[in-house]
Each structure stands twice: as structure tokens, then as C-alpha cells.
Image (cartoon, rainbow, N blue to C red):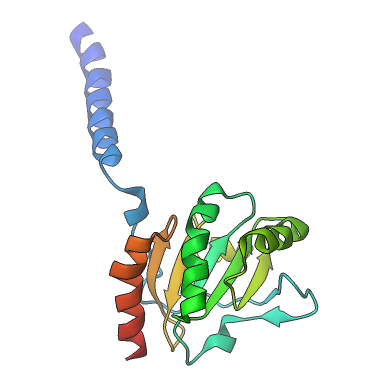
Length: 176
């Protein structure tokens, strides 16, 4: 009976270690999104640069576009920003920025310093839209098709490799 007192906690500990070990081998950027192939959540937010003007994803119907979640406080956003600037210059697809849990003045200053690849940015100060999209943190990017359906989610920065191997072929296919 005394042995059982030690065996049960030891067994639970071993099982937890196995699950932890499996979890540590997974790439966190490959977290499956329940939103893939589902309509993008609807929202209306004020634009970052003009709080008198609102934006809703409905305005992008008929276009393949990207929703990029970013913030001035996000170090990884600065890493992906040159790729977004390049995408914008190349006219690959419209990019809408979702400024996430940020101060409006900080976000505007950050774009002035680093370039503004966005067709427009909306301001999600409270993070409610981010929650609706299942955002884990910034940066995250969603590819949304002409019908308003999410077709891809990138967790973490868009790298040149992700752009060339994943986004460009997908955007071409969706525009085809």
C-alpha cells in the first residue's frame, strides 16, 4: 500500500514529462488555426491615421488581401517589416494593418520611421478584433480570399522564404 502511494504520483509525473517532451518538439508557428477555410470575422474599426474613418473587411470583398497584425512594441514586427515593405512596393496584394494593443501616437511614429506598407491600418487598442481572429501575439498575418474566407495564417514574422515559398504561390492561386 505504501508503494502505491509513490507509484501513482511517479506515473503522473512520467506522463506529464512525455507530453512536455512532445510539445517541445513542435514548431509553435505551425499551430493549426480553426479559422482556415472559414469566413473572416467581421469587424469595424477606426483607421489609425484618421479616427473619423472606419474600415470593415467587407470593403475588401472581391480582392485577395492580407491582414497583418502588428504593433510598435513588437520586436518581431520590425524583423518582418522590410518584407512587408517589399511586398507593398511589388503590388503583390493589398495589405491591411491591424495595429494591436498599441498607442495610436506610437504606432504612427513607428510607421513614419520604418515605412508604411499598408493600404491602411486600423487601430485595435483593446485587442478585441485580435481575439476574434485567434491572435496569439504580434506579428500574425492572414491571407483572405475574394469571398472573405481565411485561407492561410502565418504566426510570427513573414520571412523572405515564407513569402517566396508560401504566400506568393497561394496569392497567385487565389487570384487565378
